[in-house]
Length: 134
Image (cartoon, rainbow, N blue to C red; front, side):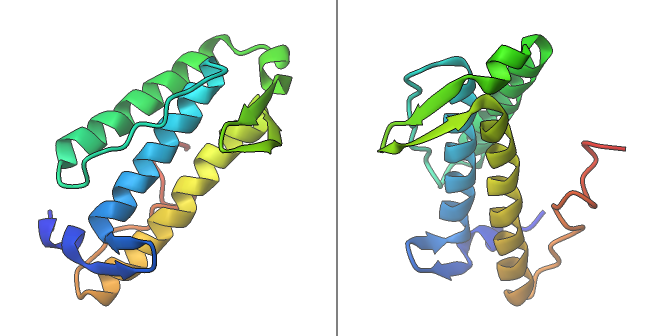
């Protein structure tokens, strides 16, 4: 509804909201693929393409749904290595939780930045505001 929100300055490592949104979906895709692969690819998204970013988001959610439909307790306990930090190891269960919290944390940032930019950010993108659960 407000494409101008994507050009709000973020600061730090992220230039604009569009870069933060790309980061959210890149990590979501990487972690979703890590559920099914021992060597997931980290795909860099074009922050200027809303269509590409949301397609990656939808694909990640489809991958997560696929995993959850067939996941066994063994799958949830399976340990994964983080490619860029070989000292990090985590279970499939922990990975699912990280996928959720990473997005919630960053969407909170996006909401704050957009509101500070004078644009209505809509309802919160947190657990209370989500339509994913009743």
